[in-house]
Length: 415
Image (cartoon, rainbow, N blue to C red; front, side, top):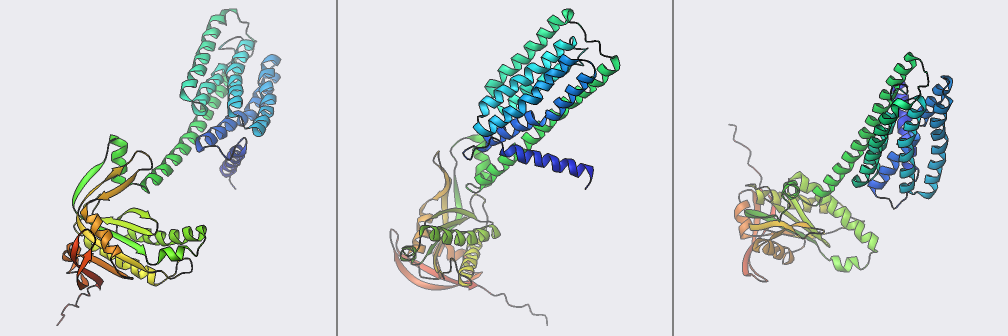
C-alpha cells in the first residue's frame, strides 16, 4: 500500500468514525452532514493543536503553548459529551467559540500579528465552520466576532510585548499557519460540496422518477403551472385480471412485493422504448407515448411495448403466481401537465385517455385491444383481428381490434 493510499484510508476511517459520533436515527441528511463536519473540524485538528503546543513549549513560550494545549484536552471531552447527548447546538457553539477566541489569545501572548506569525488566522476557521455547520443568518455573529478581534488586535498592537521568538521561527511558523488553515478550509469545503452534490443528484434522480426531465426543468426554471396540448399521442392501460380476489388471499407485504416485481419488469420495457410511465393505480399501469416528446411512431412504439409486456408476463411468474393482463390502447389528442402543489404528478386528460381506459376495462384476458384511431396508425406494421363493434361506456358502439403480433417482413428476392 502506497503512502497516499494509507493517508486516504486513514481519512476515510476518520470520516466513518465522525459519521457515527452524535448521530441520531431521526436526523435529516442535512443534520447528519453538519454533525459529521463538526466532528471532523473540531476533533480532526487535534493533532495540529498538540503539535503547535509542543512547538511553542520548545520555543520557551509556555503561555502560548498552554492555549492550544487547553483545546487539545477540552475537545475530546466535549466530543464525548456530544456523542452521548447528540446536542449539535451546544457542541457547535462551544467549539466555534474556542476556535475563535483561542488563536486571538495566542496572538496576544506572543505580542501581536507579526511576533505570533499571524496565528489569529486560525480564528477564520470559526466563521468558515459556522457557514457549513449553522444556519446562514447565525453565521453573521461569528464573522462580526472575527473582525472585532482583528480590530482589537490592531488597536492593542503598540502596547503588546513581543515574546522574542527568532525571526526564522516566526517566518516558518507563518508558512505553517497559512498552509494549515488553507488546507483545512479546502478539505472542509471539498467534502461539504461533494456531499451536497451527492444529495442534489439523488434528489434530482427522485424528481425524475416522478416527472419527465423536460417538465422538471421547466418547473425549476419557471415556477408556473405546466399544461401542454399534444395533437398526436397514444395511451396504454394494463390491468391484472382477477386482482381483487387474488389480493384477498395475500398479506399486505406479499401484495406490495408482487406489484413491485411486476411494475419493475414493465419499467424496464418503458425505458427500452423511450416511453413515459404516467402512474400506477392499484394494479393498473398507465403509459403514454408521444408526450412530453412528440414522436411520429407513438402508436407503433406503444404497441411494441404492449407485445413485450405480454411476452414477459407469459414467460415468468410474479410472487410465485402466473398473471394475466388486459391491455387497452387508444390514440388521439391529449392535454398533459402537472397538477397540485403537494405530491404533484404529471398526468394526461382528454377523451383519448378515457377511451384507452375503456379499451382496457372492456377488453379480454391476455389481449391487446385497440381503437380504430390506433389501428389506422399501426395496421401496416402489426397483425390485427377485427372484433366488430362493441358497446363502450360513455362512447356508444365502437369498432375495436385485437393486436396479434408484429408483421413478418418477406425475405427479399435475390434471384
